[in-house]
Image 1 (tube, rainbow, N blue to C red):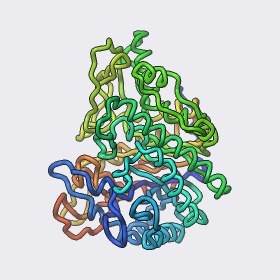
Image 2: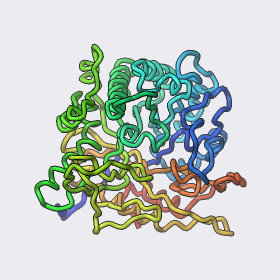
Image 3: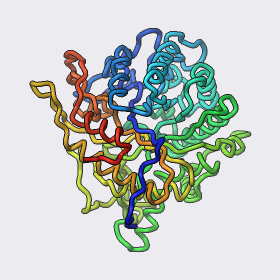
Length: 471
């Protein structure tokens, strides 16, 4: 659809950026924090551990001041579960409460809205040892944790996100280091989707609890949603794309928004004797979740074709692209798209297509909670970082948001990944996403000083003009 006139971004549009606790904070075992599954996992060879990261834990005031200088309206960050509850349950760590109180208050000092993610890939290690999401008690663990967050921060936090990229936890949890498969498991697919079910129930109960305890707050899920294209107009390819979209995208939002499982996914799980078991009250809990909005992460689309039943599923190191699933879909190349230097597809138009599809299915306000370009940024001798490739990437994606707004989509805000450089899940510190450069290498901590990239100044102008000047 071509428009003669573009609508402006909404006046209250939330411009900002995102981080996650385990990738940015460091201080992994300081001030009473317990280890998370991320702290005890084996990191990829040649990449840093998570003990220091960007040292945001000690430098949050400096970092939030830089966000304010950019003009942020919102800062999306996550709370480390094991910083609040070192054992995952039981005694609350007062130092953890104190730290996040400081972060929230620092945001509010600059009129930056805190957008708080409750869980971002970092299950407390103590709970991991008790089975993680495979344990039915995980529903209660998460709801109790949510209650503590609401009690301590709900007077100031008005926007909440539940579980970051639950679909990636389910589809590629092994790659993320966050999937616990019990020893002796004989049906791994069933086990994975039982864990997914526990997450869905926990999320729904946390959303219902938020509405009960914090009637003026808003809450939503934060999956990674990327539209899947058929490789051709061949009817079988269309069906394959529907299958892949259902497994990758719609399962999670159908349950979150409507409280029911996607029929295509349920049928597929039935074929493999892998449907999750419902405990008493689960169906009602799912129906009562009722998110107020949808947060979603977007990086790239994927393309697929008919699968004849011979494909063995594997996932690439970029976490998102599956080779296929027997009888469902087979990955296909898209000759119309380029890639980043880390091999991720770049598809700004697919961003608009994804936004339109989400909104047409669910009719809830949308906020982009991640979108960005990882690159090998270099600090020059005069203290500058020239990243025109990032500016171009973000410009093209923001243009597509405005087109989606003109299409009639209710867009709340845009929080690209990431506010400052942090430790990437697979590539460590070398893969940089931030507007703010952190002076450290993979294993040499150097000064940890902060430097404004060219994209910092560009994004500041974008925010100042509410998206009207993208040059």
